[in-house]
Image (cartoon, rainbow, N blue to C red; front, side, top):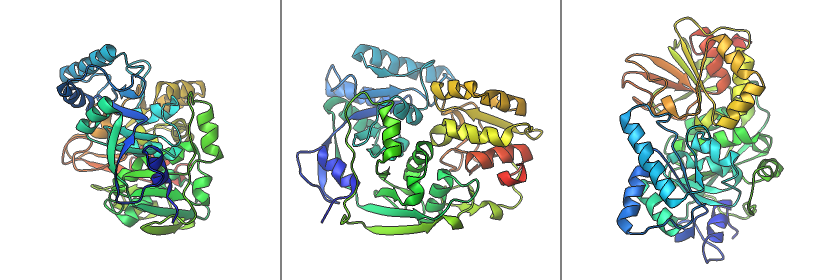
Length: 420
């Protein structure tokens, strides 16, 4: 019996020729990632071990992005604590104000994560890098500490679920809609500790930006990782960025899957996830009258240049609805620069939006767009749990950037077709 892509990557990072689902292994790590929320705890645990140096100064990557620019004294103190650790350890890949970005947009852009890697990050959306054909998964701060110390992590090799997407995409349907539809179908625990493998002609025709969006939200179905086998699109992306060797893996034809699920995408329209779970999805035609107070376009899910271009296409020459706040957060400084060169910022600002420096900000209820009691927001973020973006009595609806932009214009959740 052959191996899945997840099994092949993990086996290559052990001393084994092959591994199978359910097996417990120790794997060598290519990247250990942390942010300003999770790294302080990891540093304290690292110090308890008694070591003076991390296992590799290039492979430990820290990106303060959740509460930066610092929103208050506590977040400033956390950032200072991390900064001093990075300086003392002489970490090569520490990114803060001015050269930073939202971590899961930044690492691929910088060529720090590559096909065939094994990556742990003390952030659940580390699974984003599966879009490059890497085994990437979120861990807790103590596992991050152990990774920084040893360069290894233990795993139970996950079973895999193969998702096959066939057909032709409808207008305004993107990778965000495919993953929301999938989560709506299988539920938030439908792939619990499984490797989600996204395949089919539709995936092959997606851009890297849309692939990142799909892999990013694998965790919202409980997935251990969300993998897409590398192809020419992947190679074209990484060749511009890679400064080290990488390996391409794909699943064997006779690999064993727990389940194979097929979708005809011609049946999928733009999706909206209603409060308070990402699985609570409806097609845009089923939304009804849902008025909103705020729209957020950005995050590690949809803060890339393609997302901003789509939002600008919808917003150009139009105005945000009265008494509605539209907040746009580019994923990195480079994305911001590209958007400025293309004139996207002028379109956003002329429409009445506020454009921010890269930050996670409102996605986790951090800052830069907190919701008051009773307010509703539509967002291109990845979670809409109770109180996720502010007051426990607020509501968050998830969508793609085109739907979010159109809704900002109308003041209620609508299809882009209503404003284009």
